[in-house]
Image 1 (cartoon, rainbow, N blue to C red):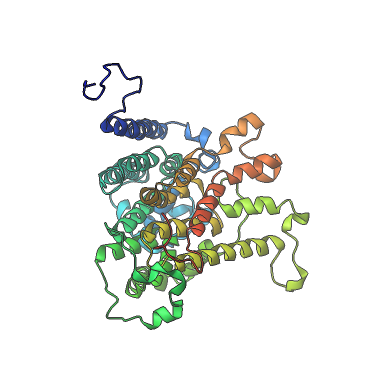
Image 2: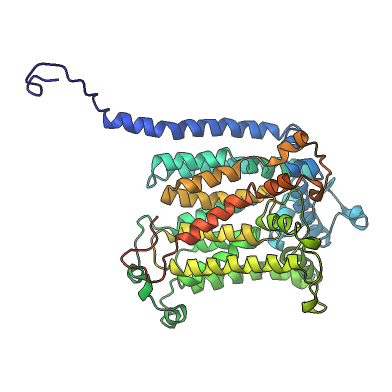
Length: 479
């Protein structure tokens, strides 16, 4: 210390403040350490694909047909398409003569995915094609992580945290084990958000006082077809591709319509129909199979189902008659208390989501909120959610955390990405083949809630972010 700063010449007992660059280094070091650990964990999970270890950690790997069962279903659909058979055939004895894979789960997606699979069957056998797909997914993960780290308009610590999620996420392992393509869907959704999000988020003038905004019908009266710009084609292509792969992204049509992007909605839906319609014209019976497998709202309770609907079914089973007794007031309809409660909860979840999304009109950074909200809606209302499906929530939590830095979002994302309680089966003496109805009561509820409750919390966070009616003086939700 200079003598002019300390006239007495005595040494000061006050600690010297750390230089700003040292503070920044300390704060930025932890996310980088976490990222390095996530990379090591990812390498371990990749190596595990060549062993029997996933069977000890994932219930789907333990109880299912075997490794690549989902991929083989898609491969078989492609082979069936080339040979003139239906792509929605099951693994039944009558279909055995033209089966080209050792085992498979039935195909349930739109026909264009089978078109792509048919091309793959021309170059690779089933096993080789599966490992090519695993390699492609690994390249996709590296590419996505590199993109996230390169988005310099977001804080460095947030970028490294999000990159760590993509690297150290356990559902990615079962995704690779089963040969699924939820990861492709996740990457498409992440890029849809990125392409739709302006570098500088600005607020629409009408959003400064949400209570003064006109109603939905009044806003649409001002709609102009000429004023509705098509915009760049890439977001439309990405959204259309996502609907062809995993159709739940059709829910994003609702915020698009809120923002009066009617041309995008019509173009995207038209492309999906045009690409799928030729097959269904050729085999109209398969349209019923597709609808039955995907749109029937109810199912049974599966041990590997980690959706919110499964948790509700597990809770309803504690009611008298397990909620299965038919309701006499509804006549001959096949409706019981379980179906009635599940339907009511789903309608409530959807209605609150629509209400929240409409109130986000014109608010800054609403694209991240839209993606998180409607992804969680899907996870809360769809009948079956397998563990690998949770890969598709990665883009939503990535977008929301990059934009807001919310610790709650991060904690929920980490909980969703951890292993399930299946690892506790040996400790509790539960055999792999034991039905959920025979599990200990509290464990059964915990088993079905480890991932669905964090999703419910994320959904509630989104609902809370909607501006309240009569709110004044803010540019939208505080993010």
